[in-house]
Image (cartoon, rainbow, N blue to C red; front, side):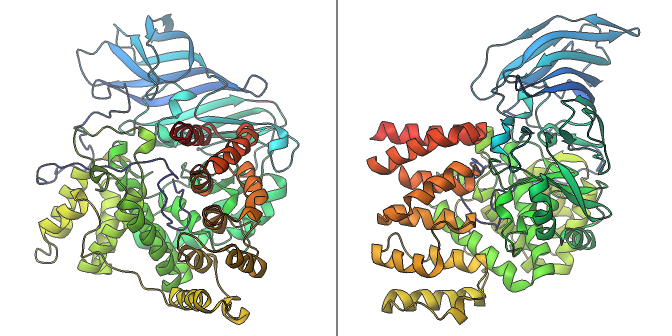
Length: 637
């Protein structure tokens, strides 16, 4: 997932708090790459995959737009591991469990089951008694209209305003709200699905979508590669397809598909670049689904079908690093996966590093340096406000995290920074070969930080024993803050931006349009970020008249400009602030605005009124984030 389209850092985006785990020094790696043993239980799942694990899932479900539910059957092919195990434990959240059956001697027979009371974070434990250790178990169920992993949009909330729209967001632990599962990345499974829906909507899944499929209300899907539950996805709406290459294209509403295809036209080049660096793309197709603006994240790396926010379509490709990020997950995250949320940097840090390598290859070192600099400036500002335990890449034993709070800017940006540190120490050629070997070695497996360190010790550190000290590795992985040996990213474009800003702040004279005419989004972001906490009303009005920041369609600029106007008391921006946060549901873009508004009684009242109007179109994840923020602010006032 990339909620930071530019490698831009913001704690609210993913709602994630990073991890820090002080563990013994890594031991020698296992000689067998095929089966990585996961020693730690995933604290965010009731499942017991050391006893029995789902090997394949067969769904037969119906999408009901009127009831806002998904219902049907989930059939599990099971791999029993513990000879004494006689129960199958699944994760659920707000699911109605109607019937459970086990297959024995070719016939389906009822199985006793118990659905526990709901935990506010984990949902309800579903315990199925399986005294015969059935090879297959089938659960009949129905989701709730309030399922945390689904959003249902009326036609008025879509781009075309003709048909309803539904989409899922399973990461971190929301898959359990629309399918009963072992909802942990420690379990990987193949799946098939038969899905029925009203005949005028197109249904897609994170599977083998056929670009030429007929829209008829009856669809079948197959995912032959094993994936964890958070990568299972579904969407349905007024969707059409337009190709970019033989193996990639865009699904979107008819009014959006041409703009998106043009903006993302470099996707095939991105795939080829990553293959050249880190090995073959192993998922056959790479398509993108452009969702409505209510999508709570920048993107979601569902295999074969990345979900993408429309807020990155600005007409100049300046925000397409988000596509590079979601594509990079096809290697780091989807192929080699963290074993639990507390090892989140193994997904997001690696992906952010690979993303930047793709960006550098296609758009140049200067562009990639600007993105690195923005991300790292944000991280340096944010990390000092975090509890020390969450400033490290790996979580300390006993540290409790909400699963949705397990990926902060530390996981993304400190993780990528650490990998760049290794690249600089060992050399790009050596480090690229190491990463390629890493992706091959652990392909389609879920691992821990310690497993990575074991592999790196043998395949990188030991080969060049004098280049990196163990104390340096420990400081990066388990230490707080940013190590003093962190490499810096220098940008000539930002030097020019700094000069223009300093000159204006000193003289009131805006830079010549010839200077700013070629600025890209990243330079405007840097220009605003360097303004300080507040400006005078006159200064803001001058900037607005020259650059029309108020009302900008560029969310990266809006998320910085609007908080500055709130802090400075520039009320002229209020109408456009309301329009922005009522139209856009992407948490990265709107949470900084809500946070600033909530700091004063007047701003809080304005935020509450805007949220009341926006709420029907927000995703449940966004709604929960805004509700929590405003409730806390109300208590404080």
